[in-house]
Length: 198
Image (cartoon, rainbow, N blue to C red; front, top):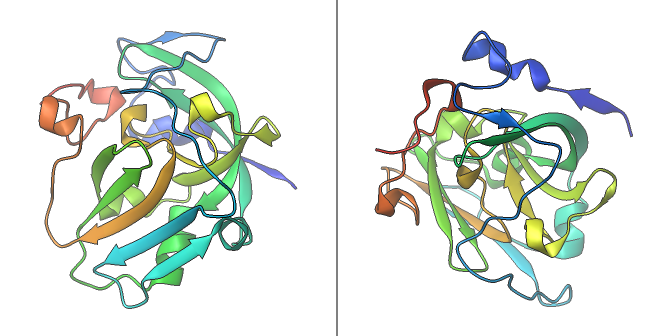
């Protein structure tokens, strides 16, 4: 499978690839709100509901059977580190949205994880090919500590907007606050504007 390099996405938001206040690391630290949940491939399901014409409930095999691609992206943590040139494989958000037939009145998206995590983004920020539901990192299945079997990644927002262990998305007609947003973190989370806290 060919790789698509999207590391130049920063040119939309700032002059430098490394956002202000970030330091580059070769490590991949593990940060989560709690422990790593267990999952069962046979019972796992991914759901899409809310402001859509075609609600979805997908098994693991059905999900990974969706059209997928491999991308090279940068990863920016709100705590101040960035890991560059990460290779992910997964389904783009627009692909999933197309299958769900998103309604015209949808404006936001809430992502839900197995650990009761949630995070919200404007729909316009999600409808980008760099927004991936990924199950592979550097050619290997995504490790549980890093959000496996499935997590959301994006190079244009801080990583807390990418739910780990994601099991569903709800299309909303108005914004809601997710787990960290309720605790004072930024709704917008643009690394180049250092939008860490609200």
